[in-house]
Length: 146
Image (cartoon, rainbow, N blue to C red; front, top):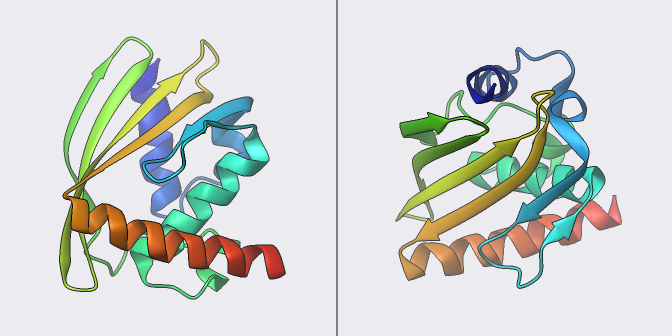
């Protein structure tokens, strides 16, 4: 099941998944951020965090997040390894933010319907975590004002 979910995820990142995040995420999805202590529960908050991450990694100003602009086109963001088994996927990514190398893992779990029920992000090194934290906080604050 996870292979189809991840294929849809990649299509979404390329702007080729018509249903977008609404189609990919389960209503009770949980987002686990590398910079927020508590799990974020629900589709709407997960969409907000993923949209902010898209815009952050894309170097956008929030407009790209609102439009769910793909992050893989024209950026340095990319997945370099994938491991999938059953309902779980581990996707290692690399990118650069403010001249800092960012290495991380998206750990994605889907249900029997192929909807994402958990999205966990882990990032290294510490300088990357700090950069992501600053930019995500600014992006989320900007999205709340809009």
